[in-house]
Image (cartoon, rainbow, N blue to C red):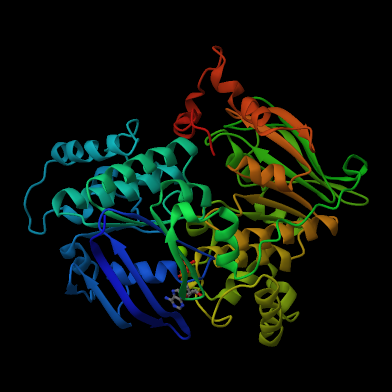
Length: 527
Ligand code: ADP
Ligand code: MG
């Protein structure tokens, strides 16, 4: 493990402002080397340079003692560098097999039989733990976690055709359930035993500590520390990432939750997913957590509450001082003051191709427009500047395109969207997915502020600890059934997990055919 594979010397890269400010870093052959850092630190930018997706930079990169200066992804492949990117690049209208072997489909008009293609893809699907997926199905039917594993299968497929010396994984576990992540980790370990160098980027610091040989901490475009993993504690990592000592999460300021007014009342709703009626209330000034295994209905419940799916029986009502309104669709939900943050930023969250300002103000356009409907650009600037500073959104200015922001900063913009509208109820599906620890704390602090202003927040998360840290109450879904409600502090991670498994472990649990695609991950613990 002492042989150097890759050395980066004084690497600089600017967009409109400098993003990488003199990176010096070496990677050894066969090591698992993690890079951690806050959102916006420049990790993906550095990786995009190594994989030839970004060029025009200064400095030098030496790969196996040769000068390496890729200008396109195929240059990286020639050198034996393969990657699974942070933002997924799965093409939904192609089959799973075609996605895996996309980069290896013949260039000329040679005939490839579908069965041959699917046979080859099968090998990779089994390898990454997607044994249950049919290689011929369209990729758009995969869950987010499965898509992320498919991204890895694509990277591994390249390895079998060209010798892979370096594999770059940028946030590969953000959407994975616990066992899926474990599987990934064992694949990574196997590859490193075979001499492949792995660059691993993740916000799951405990995983990072466990699987890495070395960890480098990046802050604001420079490497602030590179050390053997055994020398770093999680608190060390966090304070080096932020440059400040770790003060821990903000303490909750308790109140008598059960005396608060209810604002959203869910009365016996059923729909195509939920055959067992769901009833619960969320109150003003309360954070309600929705826990459950992957595929247990967390996402479907939030969508139903926002009026995105039709209800068969029951009602969802928003209670205001003197009236109660039944929510029928998402348009009306927004009008009544309900905000929704979806789990899948890229597919259903951001408005691609639009500016940060546009993305932030979209549902609240009327608040910055004249009565004639014309946007007041001075107001727009004021509003966006205000949120940029409040939420510490890293950007050049409010005209920057939303896709060019790092994942965590995109998430902050989406949250700001609903803060701007002054939503009374916020439905948040995995709001901290792929977000670094400091941005996470910032989001938690915001939620705490909202709670103290009397807003009601319903948050679905695969991380039980996240829920037990920030919620006042937790409801647990198991196989599309609400099985348990825990009052604050009357819970333990084990009890929540036991409840989450309830409908999957009893012999009478029958899989609802309509839910089969959702249930594929059903026996996986979400975290
Ligand atoms: P990380 O992966 O560490 O979260 P990134 O490398 O994605 O961070 O982003 C680093 C910084 O570079 C961010 O402030 C981001 O807004 C900026 N950035 C990334 N890509 C672009 C781009 N194409 N144009 C302008 N700025 C960009
Ligand atoms: Mg990134």
